[in-house]
Image 1 (cartoon, rainbow, N blue to C red):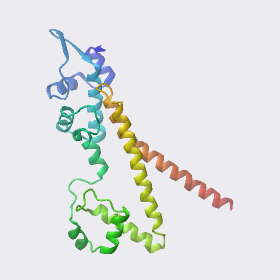
Image 2 (image 1 turned 45 degrees about the horizontal axis):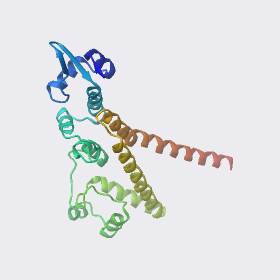
Image 3 (image 1 turned 90 degrees about the horizontal axis):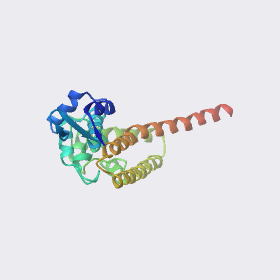
Image 4 (image 1 turned 90 degrees about the vertical axis):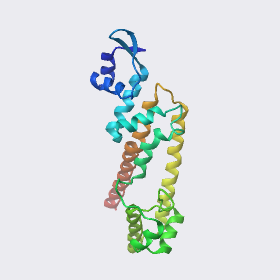
Length: 225
């Protein structure tokens, strides 16, 4: 379909001046020119605007990052790293400016027991982004394991927690592949929204809610007894 710019504004809730700015900056393709001062926009423009808006508001991407991603997009969500990079950076959960350590530096700086450290790596309890790249995030996990040990909770429950995390990641990968299989230039912004909303909103909602329900049931059962 073709749209007047007023219709694009109504459908995206993005001001005309912003849309024209996106075009000047190369984030959006030029509108179809019918005659002087008469332009028409397509469904692709609307999808791109929604994608830009979502990436800016929800992910905090800059115009340059979005422009680079759009210039390198193709028919797959996964085969173009530029498109998936914001998602990967968010999933890594490593704040900007954090100090990185090699394995040797890490063990020495935080006085970590090397035997425990190797066991946690082997069991997948520690999952650094790169093989020789560690931060204080790994320290917090090690301290958590030590706290479990201190109060006498069996280590197997932590390993089981890791296995569930791995299984969930496989399920999320299948979700991504299914999204890839239906991707088109007309729906890619919606597919990205589905992916981000699932990983960062639905996951938290579902896991926390079911934890709440189980804990609530345990409390009720205890009161009844």
